Image (tube, rainbow, N blue to C red; front, side, top):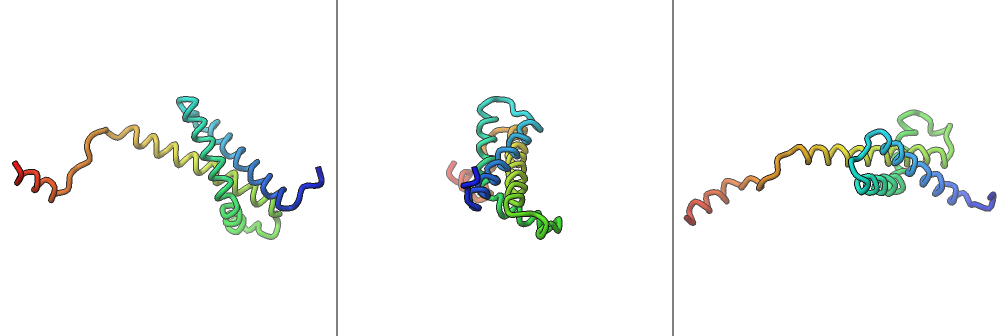
Length: 119
């Protein structure tokens, strides 16, 4: 088990943080269907893996923990937060669009005038 390189530990920490963030977000606001849960979980994991490094570094800087945390801890924290935020943003966006009335998009003024001239 000690044969894992430093980069391997970083990837492992990032993956664990992304999965933990997605799991927490699913427990926090339960989705309506299994498909929604699977999609949101996958998006959370991907966002945690992609944005976890930058998020962890920024959080460590804001909280003034840069010198106190190791690279793996920073990645774990960043991936969990990025994953949690990504899922929450998607959930809020879906709820917003589900409450809006469905209908045609409003036409621009020039399009309405062209329609009136053509009649």
